[in-house]
Length: 469
Image (tube, rainbow, N blue to C red; front, side):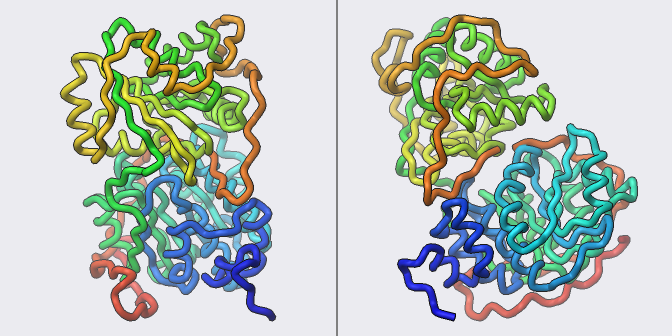
């Protein structure tokens, strides 16, 4: 076998130890070069180490864990038994489960592995049938998976590899008790990979309890400011808010508007549609099918404006979002950073605008300071020329119409943006609340993680058996 040259497609993946069939599957999606988080974590994960990876949203974490999961399951050559998956990928939201499946499925197909998603908000029948038929990899939200385990449709005692994706978000949503119960149900000697944007106390408790001698790879600072992201704060009068937001959302490029409440998101989407700017909403009151349809319309370019609550801050991965607008500033800086991270992805440029009414001035200053950013602050009214500059060229207005009901067809008004070759394309997420009630167990605490720069990296030892399960 000839060694790939640096000019060969996928040569860097080959140097990291990725099997040739997976390199080919990545190349078919236009993924020829690894992102930094992948370069850092793939060799250790492929060798079977427990890995703790930190990188901001959009840094390529999905491929960083999907490749080693598929490669190691294919190498072990075991066949899945009914109701007993061989790998478990836990995610906080339904949209993220679908997004992970989008990246995982072609890789699994290249190695003849079967995959399934498990999450709430939809009927469990197809999920139960998939488990009964035997699957190698399950991508699951904690609540529904615990339900199916309680109904004896699934067991985790055959799991060889467990992945926690967006661990900090699972902690923020209160899912950690369920996550711990699920981890307690997996074999103590299995490999575990944990990926997170931040490593706070809640995530550290998971690391200490469930990872053995993990190798830490951190490719981003805890609070990072993207060089290609421009921040603006627009100081407005309260009565000008609707008109200012409408102007900002009226450009040709995709824009994502964040609201604090579900009612506010619905109301804003309705106002934009009435003003001739087709918009769709994303929040917890929508059915799963409506959320998926709205995200598909937004990611395909059929609709250029998405109005969302914080549920989408971690929940969507759509390239070419030119503008993020904090119509309602978030309550804390972590939410601000995750919202803002929807733009300036994969090297593209982006603009982040925070709309600030007089009573919010102190909170916004504190938010910017905690987030480590220095925005340009401008006093504006609806006619200020900066609004047109931020929104870009105006899109033609469509005939004013009532807000589209959740199950109605979408208005097509512009050509979709085709995927760009060579970029690691990503797309949507959200999940239901974690449920309690499964038998509790407590795994023992383990040593502190090792950093990637620390000496030798021996294989992780066997874990001592958890009690109670």
